[in-house]
Every structure is written in C-alpha cells, then in structure tokens.
Image (cartoon, rainbow, N blue to C red; front, side, top):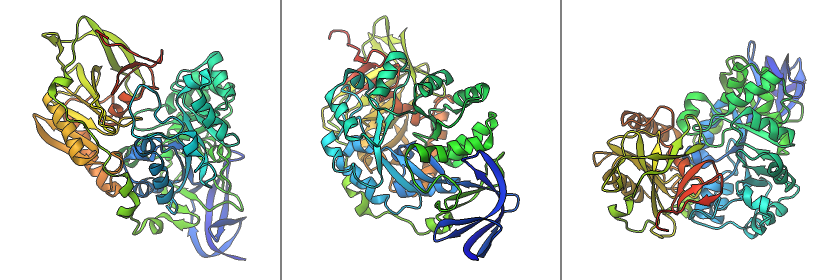
Amino acid sequence: MSYDLVFKNGTIVDVKAKTSYRADLAVSGGVIAEIGRLDGEREVDCSGKVLCPGFIDAHVHIESSMASPAAFAEAVLPHGTTTVIADPHEMVNVRGNEAMKYLLDVSEDLPVSVYVMLPSSIPSTPFETNGADFTSKDMEAWIEHPRVLGLGEVMCYPDVLAGRKGIMDKIALCRGKVIDGHAPGLSGTDLHRYIQAGVMTDHECTSFEEAEEKRRAGMKILIREGSAARNVEAIVSGIVKKGLDTEGFLFCTDDKHLDTIEHEGHISYNIKKSIRLGLKPEEAVAMGTWNTAQTYGLAGVGCLEKGFDADIAVLDSLENMKVLEVYKKGIPSGRLLKDRAEHESDYRGMMHTVNLKPFTEEQLKLHTKGKVPVIGLVPGQITTRYLKEEVAAENGLFCPDSTYSKLCVFERHRGTGNIKAAPLKGYGITNGAVATSVAHDSHNIIAAGDNDRDIMKAVEMIQEMQGGYALVQDGKDVGRLPLPIAGLMSTQPAKEIQRRLDAMVQRAREMGVSEDCDPFTTLSFMALPVIPELRLTDKGLVDVKNFQMIKEKGE
C-alpha cells in the first residue's frame, strides 16, 4: 500500500514507553496511517534523524511574546511547538469578554493549535486597578467552546482558602475540566486545602523541594522556562538525583519573549536543557508532549502512533535537539506560514486602551526617612525580596542612583490618576528610564529610572503609542516598540518585533540595566501582587506573603 507521505528510516521517539526505535512513518489525510516498513507517493529520507511528536506548551500567555497570535505561531512553529494551551488573562484584564472573543476568533485556523483556559483572577487581587471584569457569569458564554479546556491559573489562593464566593463559583463552573493553579510557596495544610478545592496543577515552583511536595500532594507540575522565570535546572536536577517518575511533570514557558524564543527555542529548550541535566531524552520529550496531552485531555496529539495527528518535529539528534523541520498534520511548516497575516478588523476592538489622567512630576516624589521598604530583585527569578534599607535622600525625598532605581506605576485604564513609587534594588539603570504598558497582571504602566524627568518622558511615549515599550536617556527618545493591541501586542511581524526589541535590550544594557534580569520582562513583573515578596501596584506597595497593602506613613 502506498501513502501520501512517508518518513523513511527515522528514529521514532515512543513517548509512552520512553524508548526510541527505527522505522518508517506514513501519513495520510494529516493523520499517522502506519508505522513499519512502508512506501509513499512522497518520501522524506530521515536517516540519522529523530522524529518526535510536535511539542506542546502546557501554559503560555501569548501576549507576553508581544506578538499577535498569528505572529506568535510564526515564531514558535519552527522550534517544533505545534500546540499551545493559552491563558489570556493578560488581555482579558485589559478588555474582558472582547479579549476572549479576539483570541478565539484569530486563533481558529492558525498553523499552531491554540487551546484556551478561562482566566480566573481578573484582577488577580483587590490591590490593583485593571481594565475589565470577567466573572463566572461571563465565563458561562465560553465554557462549552470546543477549544476551552478549563479554568486558568487560580492566583487568588487566599480567596480559595477563605472559600470566597467569587472564585468558588468559577471553580464550580469548571468542574470536570482542568483547573490550573498558581500558588508560589504554598505548602502544608494550606496546600492540601487548595488542592481539595479542585486545583490540579502548578507552574510556580522555583525549587525541587516545592515541586516534590506539590507533586506528592497530587498536583501535576508544569516546569517553567521563560524569559524571566527559569525553573528547569532546579527542578529537573532534583528529579534526576532522586530518580522520580516523570509522569506528573510537564513543560511550559508561561512568559517568553520573541528574542528569547529565537535564540534559545521554545519548549524544545526545556527539553534540551533537561537532557543536559541528565534526564533520559525520551522522558524529557514525553514531558513536552504526551504528559501534557494526557493532563489536558488533548485527543490525537502528543504521540507518534497510528491514528494520531501527524504533528512531527524532525531533529538532528536527541542530544542536540536541533529542530530541522516541523510538520503540522503532515504539512511542512514553511507552507503553513507562507502569506499568513491578520487584518485590522481582527484586532480593532483591542485598540486604544491607554487612558492616563494628566500627571505632574510632583506625583512621582517619594518621601523617605530611615529604613524604608525596598523591592529587591532576585537574579534569574520573578520573585523579589522584601527589604528594609536606608536609601539616598535629599530634603526628605528619595534620590535614585545605580543601586536603587525609582519604580513607578501609573494607572492606565480608568483614568483614576493613581500613581505610586518605591525603591527598586538590583535593576541598575542610570541616566535614563524604561517604561512599559506590559505590567502583569493588570497591565498599568510601569517605569523605572534614576530621574523623574526621564520617567515622565517614557510614560508620555507609552501614552502617545497607546501602549508599548519606551526607553529614554537624557530626556531623549532612544528606543520605542509600539504595542497597540491592548497595550500588550504589536501589529508587526515577529521578526520586526524581535529586531526592535534586540536593539532596545542592548541599549538598556548600555544604560546599566543588570545582566541578571531582562530589562523589560523582569520589570513587567514588579507590579504582580501574587508573587512574593514585595510588589508595587497603582494603589501602593503590597506585602505578598501577608497579602496586604503596606500603609504609607501618615495613613
């Protein structure tokens, strides 16, 4: 019998048995038709090459790439990713139901399959101002959509532990589907209560000990490797050392910029890094394919077996993990990506989202006396330290320098005029400022600099662009990247976004931003009040461990 397409003489990774074997693989109608010794109308010689299932990202915010869904697919498909599970809570925080409609509409026929989790925490806490509501009532309109898999990361774990109605209604609505977690540092009795409420996964483990406890408690662990948060080494090293069963471990990126994807890879990088840390190659591949498909109930993907979709990554070897070619339902990625574009009508409802109330330099002043709360960056992580330190001051006002930057958050959705500032240690910028409308998860404008004039200029640039990245030095615009779709995504192709971003990152390094952090991604997480220990929102400083606002002197 002859088939449409046959991959000849390849080494096929069996993700169920965690082994590899030599065989031919036949494709007909986009599906794997047979495996054995076969002939086809078209044959691809795979001698010396490895065939893997297309990789699956278990948890990603497409918006964090700053690319539209089509441009994101263009960026990740060449690295072997053929399926992603997206949580659109970034864009839903800005535009609510409009954002859900946008994502599901524009991702319908992409060359990468996009499944969606319903955002659970809009906003993530009451300590910030976001742009839209997204209640359990809103979710009812989407729950039966064929590409909606369940409830997105439940960030408000204190609300779950307290049994508050809002989040419990959302969990109840999604019973029978997957309910993702987000509980950094949660352990002991509270962890078990969180799981008993219905939460099934977690992607916030930063140590093997945390991952092991949560796995033992029954959670599936999504091991994250993004642009700012890098957890593969700590967790996989522990798995290898203890010889743990990898069935309950999956891979995700969470937040990964286009430049990092281009230079490292996508889920392919999680797999490659894990193999170098000593994990059996077939186990690492299974963690990026079959384990995720099983956890999220994705039928017909994640495995090279008769009857499964012909989503295939062709590699040079399991050691190098270099992706040579990618097929989606048997079609080469090059053909799928040709002439793809989104039209303005796809995203016009997501434009014009920056609504800043006029502000003055006086509002940026930060009074200080003695030891004050300082946000301390942790190299290579998105967690921070809650420090109490003396900072440089003049006439009782904080004076930023190369050690302590001034961090500011400007509310940009509802025109409240909220502006707050705090010292940030470890960022390092001198003689300038960085600003961005990407500020997880409510996405107000966040800026860091060593002088108020440049901070103001950078924020004004964001307003002018209606969202984006801005870099200012000596009062001059030295770099900008417009992100007009919800203030989070560009209308440009992936390569153009990457080109601009690479230049801005290089300029930020020249301005002193530490090599220990990503100038933009790291900054964007400084307003996220569900990641320990200290964060700044448009309402003020948040003590995340105690889940409370820090009162300013005089309050």
